Length: 56
Image 1 (cartoon, rainbow, N blue to C red):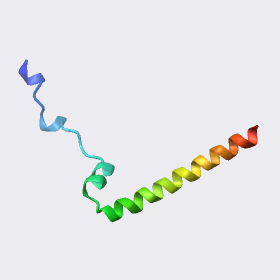
Image 2: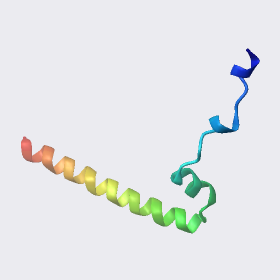
Image 3: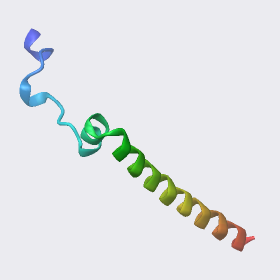
Image 4: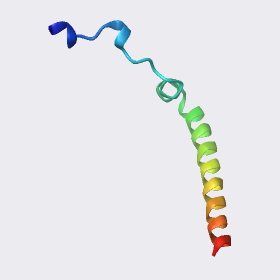
């Protein structure tokens, strides 16, 4: 019964590329990537706002 609660090595979650990046990238690289992501997200939000304004 105790075996149910013990973790095996096969059950350990594998890290994702994102978590590897966050843990191991330099702050300069993180800043570059996050800046690009924020710019792209802002552009998408502007499109949605423009579409909503056009519908009114």
